Length: 162
Image (cartoon, one colour):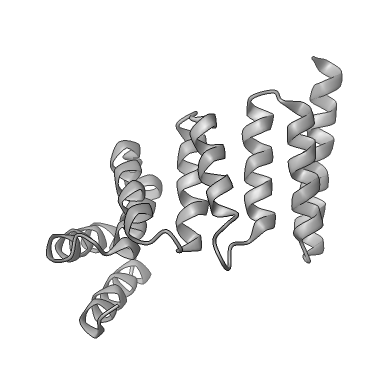
């Protein structure tokens, strides 16, 4: 990333720190008009579109461009998977999460937990429990492990109900 690009990213971060989401989005749009291959900017734009403006189609387009230009950016996968889960696209979500497992620096425990959530929504109980178990196996955080145990208990309760 060039020095000018780094400076622009810092400006966007400052705007977000000040709560100026609209200005940050506008700055990102300017950055992307000057450099359409800035995957990090596309990823941040997608995250803001998902969380702040709740424009899922715009977020999805931005995440797809981010994947094209910055496929090794771990944060991209967490946010894109969250969006796909919200959009009820389980097959695509699992494909993105499987690709994420190949990314250096990815938090595998988070990816497996997201997979568990997809499977749980799909009522694929055994797959959900297996994914939550894998999340636990990769985690070093007692808090995260406890959260996954709660996820597994919830799934087991649903198994008994259905």
